[in-house]
Each structure stands twice: as C-alpha cells, then as structure tokens.
Image (tube, one colour):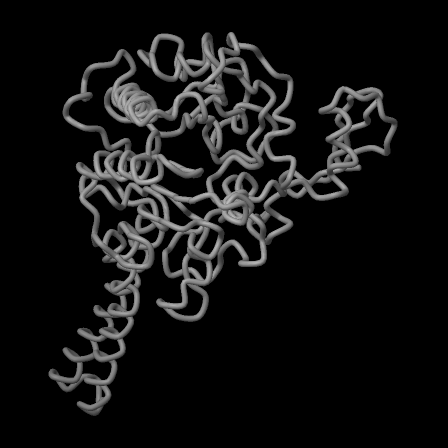
Amino acid sequence: MGPTARRGRAEPSSRTPHIDWLAEEGVRLTQHLAAAPVCTPSRAAFLTGRHAFRSGMDTSGRTRVLPWNACSGGLPENETTFARILQQQGYSTGLIGKWHQGVNCHSRTDHCHHPLRHGFDYFYGMPLTLLSDCHPGWIGQVSSAMTPKLWHYTQLMALGVLTLAAGRTCGLVPVPRKAVTAAAGLVFLFFASWYTSFGFVRRWNCILMRNRDVVEQPMDLERTAGRLLEEAVAYIERNQHRPFLLFLSLLHVHLPLVTGRRFRGKSQHGLYGDNVEEMDWIVGEILRAVEENGLRNRTLVYFTSDHGGCFDSTDSEGQLGGWNGVYRGETGHTGRGQGRERPPSPAPSFGERAGGARSVTACGLSKGLLEPRLQEHVLPRCQGRDVKTRAFHFNRDGQINRIQPQRKAVLNNT
C-alpha cells in the first residue's frame, strides 16, 4: 500500500472514510519510511526498531522473504520487539493476522520463531503470508517458478525409463528387468520428493493458527477477513479493563486480493480498490469497538503498511497494485526510489484532536527500541536540539549510505 495522498487516502478517489478520519484527527507521519520494499525484512525492522540485516532478516540476494512455513529461518529469539517491552510493563499483547517472521528451527513443534516467543501473549492468524498459491484460481507464486521445470525433468526421466523398457521387451537392449524396475522406482521417488512440497503449497503454507495450534488447513480465504475482525474485536473486549497492545496485521491489500462479496465491484479501481475499501471498513469496525468499550480517551491507534504499492500485477481489467503518488519505485524493487518504502502512516491519539498535523519524522514513537548508537544520532534531532555529530551510516540494498547532518546529503557507495 502506497503513501498517503490527500487527507491520508491510499488512492486519491478511493472511498476510505475511516482511514481519512485517522489522518484528519491525528498526525500524519510523512517521513516514516519502511525499512525494506518486501514483507519479511520490513516487518522485522518494524517489530524491533533495528535494520533487518542486524537480526539476519535481510539479504542482498534474490529471495528476501520467507517462502515456506517449513523454513528454519526467522526472527531470533534474543531480538527485543515492542511487544516484549510492553509485555514487561504489564500489557496484554496480541497479534492477529500476518506474522511472516518464521515459526520453527529444528522441528515442526519447537516454535522457536513463533510470535509467543517474541512478546505476544496471544496469536491468531497466518504464520507466513498471503500467497497467490492460497487462492485456487490464481497462478501460484511459490509453485509456478519451479513446478514447470520439475515436471519437465520428470517427464524426460519417465520417457527414458519407458524407452528402456520397450527396448528390453523388443530385445534391442539387453538390460536386466531389475534395472528397469529400479530406474522406474528412482523416477517415482524424484516425482514424490518435489510434488509433496510444490503440489501441496496451499496445504503447507496457507494455514491459520491460534497460539501454537493449527486451526484451519488450508484456510478458507473467503472467511478469513471476517474471522480476523471477530478475533480483534473479541480481544479488545477481553482486555478493556487492562492495558493492552493489539497488533492487527491484515491480509489486505496483498495479492491475490481476496475481497468479500459485499465489496466486490463497488470501487472505481477494480479489485484492488474493492480490497482497499473492505480494509477501510475493517478499520472502522475496530474504531467502533474501541469506542463502544469506553476506550476512546486512552487508546492510541496507529495505521501503516509495511511497504509501498505494487505495479507489476495486472488482470484483464487492469492493474492490481497500489498508488505511490509522486514517488518512484514499488513493492519488491531494490532500485532507487521512495515509493517502495513510503507507507501511509496516520497515528492519531483518540482522546485529543491533533488536527491532521504533519510530523517530519516518526521520532519518539519507539524511543525505547533504539540502540544507544542510534539514539546519539536520532533522539537529539527529535527533541529539536542542534547537535553536531558524525555522519549517520546505514545499509540499503547492500550499499552503504551516509547522511551528513549539516548538509542533509545522501551519498551512495561511500
């Protein structure tokens, strides 16, 4: 989802009254940059307040996200998340929706990267991410890259075995029967070895968990949004009398853009616009739950996305991506450009009207998460002090970048 347009809208002409209200009544963090143009590293940075490469959650290679629930990688347990900090302060902490920071290390039950190991008391949602493989009518993201090649190799091997068997039957090739049988067995083992994974991507990756238990496998996409909303509202109601953190990580607006019948064909932007408007409705239901449980004057609501819009995906009706305004770049692109890393970020305090003010930085929201070295560079500026420090260096896409405080210049490859 791209950066805010007028009044915080995800699209200039989208009907998003609840997101608009957040931007109008609160503060727009116009310089809140996501740490990466793809999900896994961006979320790792958001959770910890540190660049993803510091926790091993980013790479300069081609695959920068976790593609399988069975991957042994994930957010290290010794990383400090904002959920853990609040948990230590007595907050009830819940994550509902997408995680995408890994699950297991050595076995399917050790759950070393599970949300419950990172400061959350409660989890309901997808341990991975929403993939087009999860939708029966879409071409799979994970399976489409390798499956055609593996099918081709399997067919070539099977053809070779059949040729060998035919030659033996006709007496043209003096091969023992056991050799032909062994070759056929190897072909079958090769087929079984890859088809059990790539042939059942939807079953292995598209699941819903409640805490450590799988409650739906594969998940019913048509009902998932409603279930996440029900879980979120129930969580608010359960914790209305104590301090709590609810991290609601929706599956919108991610391909394959699963949208309820109530919103299909209602927007001016095709399926993507329908999905955005359904998401806005869910935001409104959350705000209503906060209001009805008497939490309006003591609740901070923070809305953002983990990266910018995507332009590559299209269907017969047009583009399925988002809108990045004047900024270049998009989701998944590692080239230069800010559109890939500028999410919409209105953050109002529910109890006091902020008048749609615009902040130049997101300083202060995660002060407790900053490393001491980063506090030296960042916090004085957040407090409005003119402090002369050394240049601030950071890593982006494998390049070392430098910000010179006095000149505010960005120098690449230094």
